[in-house]
Amino acid sequence: MRVERIDNIIEFVYKNKNVTLDQICDNFNISKSTVRRDLSEILKDSNLQKTYGGITLKNKLDNRKYLTSFNERNIENIDKKLAISKKAATIVEDNDIIFIDSGTTTFYMADYLDKINNLTILTNNLEVIFRAAKYKNINLISLSGTLNRETLSFVGATSISTIKNFNMSKAFMATTGFSILNGVTNSSPLESDIKRTVISKSSKIILLADSSKFNSVSLMTYCYLEDIDILITDKMPNKEIKDYLFDKKISIEIA
Image 1 (spheres, rainbow, N blue to C red):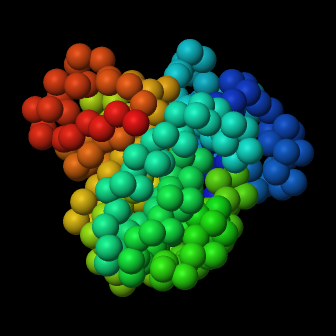
Image 2 (cartoon, rainbow, N blue to C red):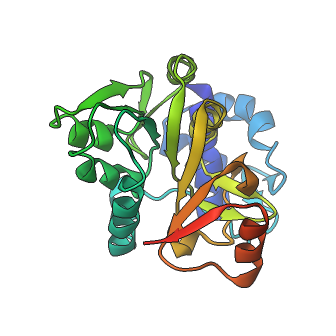
């Protein structure tokens, strides 16, 4: 899929700071003519520029976060993620219809939802599907689409089409990083489109984010802080973020 390939190439450039067309071709098993056709879309990122025979970052100190592999992210801050997921599960009520987002913090929630009566879970998160499938109290709805192996989540137009059919009482969302200026961000355009749709179809938005995500910015904004209702994290944010959230009447819950 072209959109996913372009997204992955952009991530590849950010990770390596400076890459040649040959490196892109070798890494993604595509021809130079394909890379050249993709260049106009790739260079829409204002921090990327074309060089002779390659692409480079204009600002090599850019602090945007890009995804490492699912397994690498899963072991980062694991104690915090478990605590945050357990806290998030306490918000779920009988008869809820909830969305659980892709991510390595959100999927642990499924382990704590076995006592909720008549619970419906919608998700594109493959780990949530595996974990929730064993619980008879859960009506599990999986979004169709193409599997993104970096995030173990289903993405694409069919996923968005499916989610538009449902009204959700609560959405439990993940993020690569958030800030007051840039809002809640994610590194994948394909995932960001799904997240935006979920936000528009959910009555309450709960953001699960450990403290490493504070004042961190990734590629795309999928919502702004004022769009969320509850932030669940492992420690209180700095005064600027805390005051902003309180001013917007956003609850902060510490796991």
